[in-house]
Amino acid sequence: MTTKAVSAREVTVRWRLSRHSRRLLTLALAALLLAVLSRRPELAGVAAPALLLLAAGLPRQARPARMSVLVKPGATRLFEGEPAWVDVGLSELAGLDARWALQPGKGIEPASATAVPAATARFEFTIPRWGKRQAGVVELQLHDRWRLTEGRAVVPLPLLDVYPRPGIQEETVTLSRLPSRLGEHVARVPGEGAEFAGLREYVPGDRQRQINWPASTRRGRLMVNTFAAERSQDVVLVVDATSDVGEPGTSALDYALRGAAAAARAYLARRDRVGVITYQWGSARWLAPSLGRRQVYKIIDSMLQADATWAQGASFARLPRAALPPGTLVVAFSPLLDQRFVESLRDLRERGFALLVVDVLNVSPPARRLALPSGADTLARKVWQMEQQAIRFSLRELGVPVVHWDGTAPLDLPLAPYTRRPLVVRR
Amino acid sequence: MNRAGPRVAAALLGLACVAWSAVPVLRTGWPWLALIVAAASVAFSALRMAMLDVPEPEEAYFLSLSGRAWRNFLTAVRLPPWEEIGGAFVLWLEVLHPSRPWHTAILGIVLIAWLLTVHIAESDASPAGLLRRQARVLVPGLCLLALAAGASALPAVSPGAGAEALEVLAAVAVIAAAILVLPG
Image 1 (cartoon, chains in turn red, cyan):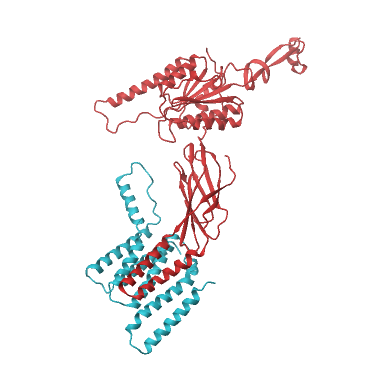
Image 2 (cartoon, helix red, strand yellow; image 1 turned 30 degrees about the horizontal axis):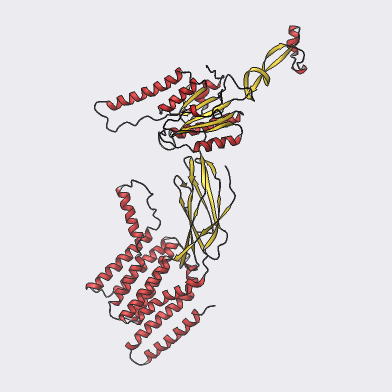
């Protein structure tokens, strides 16, 4: 996605005797000691080749204490699962042999060799799950030509922003009442749009090109075409980051983020103003609705701060007007497991917001391997399922549509009943 | 040459060092102990060479018992300086035998060859390149070794043609060593 320029980093190289040198030294010292103790000169001769190697090789080459390392990541912002790479290299080798070894960071899966004996190296990897990921560190090992000393330096790799892979959404939900702002949604009020709305009698001041001549001929008086206004809407995506249930990569939070990213793309493509609220531990992080392609990345960046943990009662009532402008379409992505979040949704609805909930819960409590003979496990699961149904029923009773998304199919499928016609909001 | 070649060569040279220094086998206290330690060190060194490409188990909070045992075994094989221990005990084993200068000189050559082969095996360095660079130092070193062995053998030989030949050989070795060691 985004490529960064090459950055040169000065690293400190720590030099020491190589394993080979230590072995030669041990052999020479042991031979000399035994030669003295046993008074056998041939043992001193055994030490001679090793001592000569050390004496001739050690002072032979300059060993720089600092070196300049070039680090060039393929991209610093990428989507999960997307191939990534980092190029590393030395600006000058100074007659040394270099070897690079990648120590991948947490959640980084190497896709190429992790050790490269060359002056430059490319390490390829993939990051299967979203988040801010440290790519890891690269250990640089330098050897002199005789391999009697070795230098080591650690080069930290850059922090990567890994965005959730967006789902697929082409269609958008449109409100029946749109604010008077130019956009691409056809409104119910007449205006200057391109969509034909109807006919009316000509009044002085109407433009001549709007006259509908066939209709005027039929009716015997001048008729002009009227057009529907084209408006944009404010959309606020609400991501429930309070509970992350399911396997990593296919959890409720993963689906919520992917769904929200898809929705952000779809609405921004229709020139709507889109914002995001991430409901999480202790507070709600928000980004005011805005336009433009950069807003997609701002929204995802904001969502990446989400930390899946237990909420301690955030409230939408405390959010400023900029975060939730009046007349906004609110699309919530949630597994609806946190009762406080559900209460907050009810509160939003009671304040008159048009609300649509995408249910991303795709797991149920795991069954025990050995079920209790009393059948209590089955009963508990049934009670839990009924509770979940009750939560969704109560929201629907308030006029909040709840659709279930399995995380893999396009979002257009569950949203189809609401994208075909404008969403009517009862206040 | 593939990567297995230097590893096998290193194992065989280590074995040769132990065998060469052990014969004739002395089944008494210290020589027997030195032989056992030297043989074990060479065996572990060969094992380390064989397991150079085996990756360490990944970090985990709750590693299984077998995983923990495997990790400890890898650490036990990789961490101790087996070649240093083996070399020292091989030399001690040689000292525990009666003086035999030329036998010791050959042992010295095999020991140096073993250490170089181990280095080549674990660093993947090109054997030809490494030896070509170090030959100018290794050759005088071996000459000095021969000189030392010759000097040690001198009192043992009776005066005559053999002794004169040894003296000439020693002088040639010193001159060759001096020429080769001179820089440039």
